[in-house]
Image 1 (tube, rainbow, N blue to C red):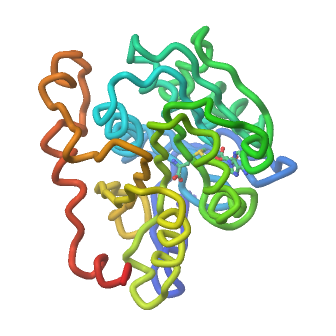
Image 2 (cartoon, helix red, strand yellow):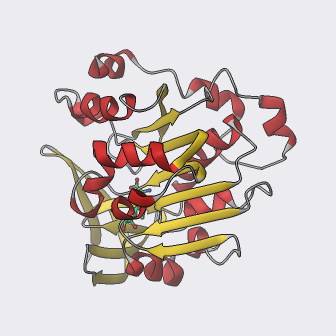
Amino acid sequence: MELWYTEEHSPYVRFSIKVDRHLYAKQSKYQRIDVMNSYEFGTFLTLDGCMMLTEKDEFIYHDMIVHVPMATNPKIKKVLVIGGGDGGTVRELIRYEGIKHIDLVEIDEMVVEACRLHLMQTACGLDDPRVHIFYEDGLRYIRHIEGEYDLIIVDSTDPFGPGEGLFTKEFYGNCYKALKEDGILVNQHESPYYQMHANSLRKAHEKIVSFFPITKLYSAHIPTYPSGHWLFGFASKKYDPIKDLDAQAWNELGIETQYYNTEVHRGSFAMPNYVKKLLK
Ligand code: SAM
């Protein structure tokens, strides 16, 4: 019998991947966790039936969530990652020698367990001595922190279930407080495409704009996420991701990437007209 993983991308659109083997299926306190092996995308992780990452295209998401802020301010030393239990974001961060300390706050220990068992491609950096893992809700963790981090990366699930609190005004205000005076916040901002007639993108963006002087969206093409067009939010107290990008300095670091480069960096901040309209 043929095995297919199917995800609803809109009430009228389904996306299916032919599966070879189902490797892991558990219900944690927070969510249903599945790891499957596929012919086209290699091994992939889903949480509550939503695609988190696949071996074949995870480099796009992790390159863009890490190298865009790091190239904007290569002096970053202390980083907080909220979510990101698969380890892909940490794997990219530890490639920077200048980063001395990374706190990873993941609500669900079982996600890390599943990835350590079946997705070492992303989990491989989690044992780096600079990485400190806390199994806690990011919303609660950040409430009592002030002026500590150069960079916060919110690598969360979408705004429902355990990830809901990470899209609130309270959370963004606390991120602002937890950052140093030149700190940067980057978050995954979902896909704009299936929200074309809703105002959820504008509402989410407005919450961040109310705290940070510099706020921008940037995008990447990620084949296994709904519509393939994915957005990230960039918010900063001081650095502008375009004006302050020192392409030569980043290129001299010699970090090899499959998707990110400094031209993609600049271009990714250009928004199509339909997205600009959604933000108005
Ligand atoms: N690349 C992914 C995407 O955009 O779909 C995100 C992947 S990562 C696996 C998301 C992680 O966020 C999950 O492991 C989930 O457990 C974690 N998470 C969700 N809500 C959280 C919260 N409130 N605090 C900390 N971690 C949370």
